[in-house]
Length: 127
Image (cartoon, rainbow, N blue to C red; front, top):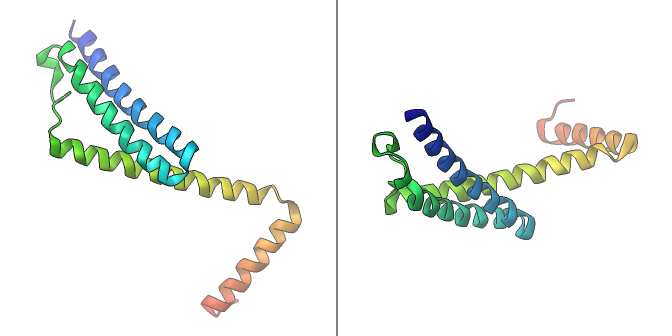
């Protein structure tokens, strides 16, 4: 029976994380990196609310800290959810920029190489 309760606890925690990730993704699609941060914060708030509302379905001896967020810990989790959403969106934008540059062909690659070498020369002073 304990393994079923631990599975319930894990499913609740995973759902909290999924709600946070969905908020980040939706916010990012709609409003870009800033929207991903906002969506991550809102998603984390909703995830915490979900976790708190169903935590009592898990037996107390297995529950641990599930659903025990205070105002302070909830605020920290929301801030981390926002930071994670923003970081993921910025990383996605950077990756998109890299892959977009890779599809410009040989001329684009050559131009990137030349500009990076000139930049290194100007900034670093070495060839």
